[in-house]
Length: 230
Image 1 (cartoon, rainbow, N blue to C red):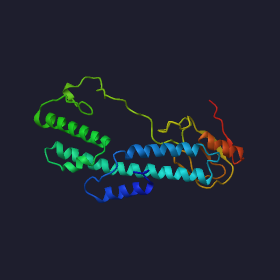
Image 2: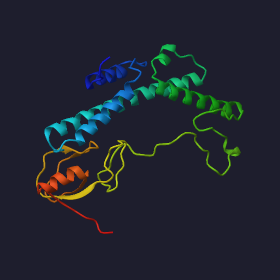
Image 3: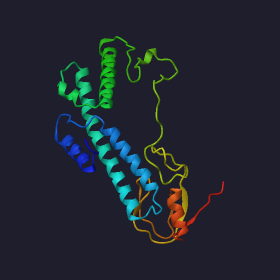
């Protein structure tokens, strides 16, 4: 199978929204889209003119991929959560639904199912359990003052870059460490920064941009760099 295109992704999303059950998607779809998003970011940051048609086209493609994959994930996740709860209540579900889940989704299904079963036993049957679930549910009366520890690593890095922050982190490993604050001196055509945020700037606007983009504007005398005093 060739590279998954935006058109393919759009088709998967339409099918998922139209069907009451899970539709079939490639097992590696999420991984492939993440790779494409990363590659597009690398390509756009290599452009000398981040405001040029080439770089902005890549940014739009990257943002389209991110929007489609997030929407697809949201629709499928709602179905998976519902299936897990139905099964936890003792009802049968179609085995084809399980087969349609990619590995990461199946893990989500299992965790929610096991958690719901454990909670049901505790609340309805009065049988406190310490089965392996997402949060090791323990009745309030048996909890200690220390909060339960969730196993595994937790990624606290935000997916989106905030243009209102000077120090910015991003899900992209190659994202700039900080944004640079500038004062705009000319009307600028609408553009996207590396995070996908869209700007339409006029003289007098104060904004923070990735260093590469800020440098281009300052070099062309379209903006002035602003240094914050501590």
